[in-house]
Image: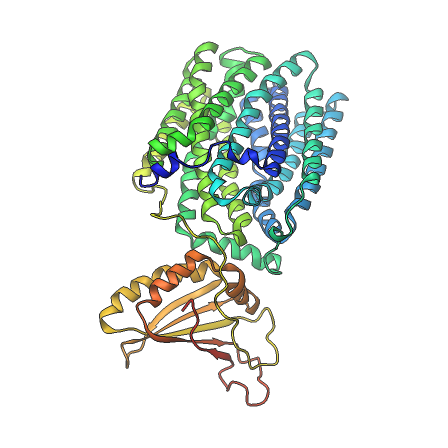
Length: 555
């Protein structure tokens, strides 16, 4: 790859840890992740010897992950519109209360499987609300050039916790019971709340999305993802990996209890092996990315994880399976970190939390759905058959990288917000914020440049749609073949103003400049409003036009 040399000479993998805000929240998140993994082990081990253990233990994972399907998108909207620091502070407090309630009920002997799953589901809702805000603050904690290192360190965080948490949980469950494990988790959320409270968020980075209303903001986020090919491809690759890969996570406690006849400590050891492997992956991922093309790295990760899934189905030796799970954990980390880094780099600030929320819906929701699916398959066909089927499916989905690779760009995407598009001229008394607007841009193109201009306008269409257009078309004048009119409709006047001031990035500007370089003279821009708006004085005529503009830098 062309950027391998720059990657090798880039900042250290540990560079983000030199920044106090990142370091503070990273350490707090480490404590919370350890507590979360301890709770997962405690909850699954309470159910592993129940009837229908495969389905019940899978249900614990599903209950913690499925809420992202319903909660993450609204959570992403809130994280883009509200103060992310306050969101994290409030939710950490709520999660501490829920974990404390589970500890109290377990200590009193009232934590039936139903109660356990309900509280796990509620905590999953809290986590789904938290994740978009947590992901979206990362570019506020580190400069853009350190985002890959920050993503790798955050993945390292999760996997250090995966190595430490299960081992601690196995020990505590064996010695004291699960109630103490749940209490530790409650305390870990208190630690996060204190760290978030101590974080002094820079005022200049607290700007919200220009007063957007929640429902239009949600629609804008979904629309952005629909018209961002690189983002869509990451989502496809994430889903194709996580759906079959979720079988190992969901069924590993049953493998430990039934196939290997282990106690909670043995299950903790297996999870710890996955975590240690992931730590090794996080520590070497920068070198791996420099040496191996990204799509090949994803392919290797998929095949290695499939091999670990086969091993969990066929090996009956704790030592052998522990060794195999080390590279399996590294493969999980490499793929997860790659998806996360690519999403962070591709999303502009104005829609980052919403875009990451869609990613979390796909990845964590896919893991939750996969957990239920593979638990049901194991209950019907057997544990070994379910794991082997999942491994075969993972190999097949990995092979689709030949047709649907991660889309790479030759240069880094410029996600800096630009506002060189002047405010539209108005000759009306006022324009309601919710009134739709039709924008017409007239171009003159020399005959020799027509084909190139039409081709250059296709990326412009995607840009217009990403930033707010609900309809777009390019028309050519039948009487004057050198005259073209770009027509696009925006759902509301307020959203069109956001196109002018907050949603156009340097990358969008370059697309528009590329198309405009093929035109002659100055484009003429018109903004048309529904005829229900009446002009005052001589106004703008019966067409309901909000006014006309001259040349605009974006075309």
